[in-house]
Image 1 (cartoon, rainbow, N blue to C red):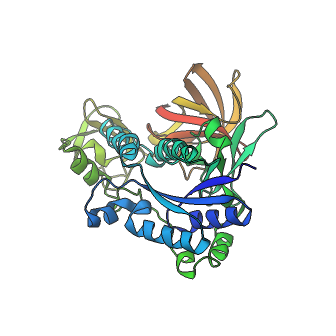
Image 2: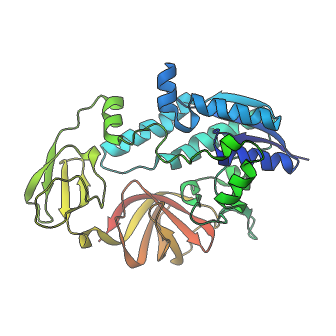
Image 3: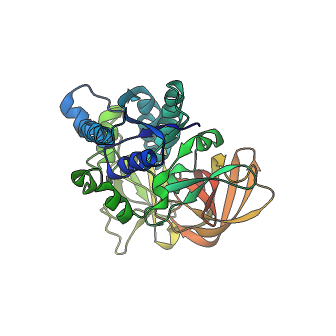
Length: 361
């Protein structure tokens, strides 16, 4: 029986319960925490490590001991820097709004961890994500939304490959968060009450612009706020401070609410319009990854999300070329943002998705 599984353990509730459930199901479980912090100073490791910081390692090791499973810390520092942090900074510098969790999932939590896990004889990797892996009648692997949509994390996992999915187990997707916390009590009352992490793990104070400036060493010059006709209406503090649809923090005296409609990294202009101007009929998407189907055949009808918290909206999609897709929504959608992901659903099943290049007016 192929039953050796490496569980990515962050020291949190969900991954700890994933390890517990898999051991209960008879798997040979190995716990692993991914070392991603970029600084060797212990205080900085704790500050910047987030879900993989020093306290996370201590918590994960404690859980592994209580479950009587082997536990290791694996170094993915270089992979995380290249695939997640460098990408995050470059996207903001180019006027886009990235989703680093999607990059981390595909290239670190799966590509790097899976390769290392197979190298030590594991058959699968597992995580505490709220999603389910299913094999469809057509033989393809896909993600299915978790039992509780409020916690569903399929949006951030759309980019996993067929090989990665075939070697992945997500036991938490069959439970609600409340049910997971009840199970966690069997492991540790202290761990069961831990709060969920919210922010990006390497920007613990949520100050993206401050992090980008410090990390890159760039100053990011001021630029012009312009209206929809190109007239200068104010000065902004640098494009990395803004994202599409933003209203707060603009410090403009327009006599009405203003919203970021477009960010131009070449001219450093930020276009300001009304809330209505932020709505778009669709978008162009590249870097396509398909899960439930092998190809998009002609024009196909689905539902799609343009951000994690977005309710899937009815749309039609068609391929423009081998790696570029057009998505047109039945109703205009708010703040379709370059750099974010478009994720396509067929009911509860993830069809696939890609990176938003631009919105369509």
